[in-house]
Image (tube, rainbow, N blue to C red; front, side, top):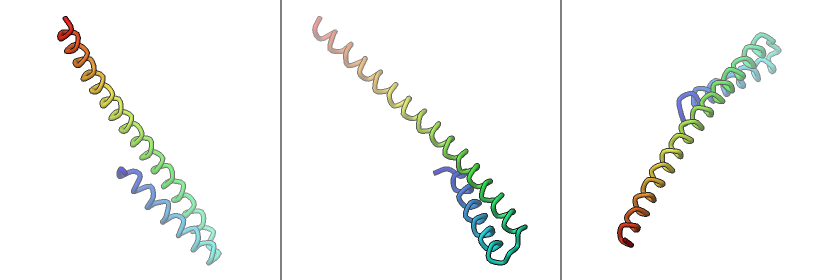
Length: 83
């Protein structure tokens, strides 16, 4: 979990609480502000999810590249043995 995911979740929860309090008290400004904060949190969380997915994809690609290089070395070693 990265900082954007955490900050986004905090903003989402804070916005949800503010919106709910606004609903209970009839304060439409609080409702609107809370809803906007929720949206901001969800967007930041989604950005964090995208960054995390990109990082994970890069790690998987690097791992696959290393495994392929090791397999190639092993094939070459086997070919030299067979010769």
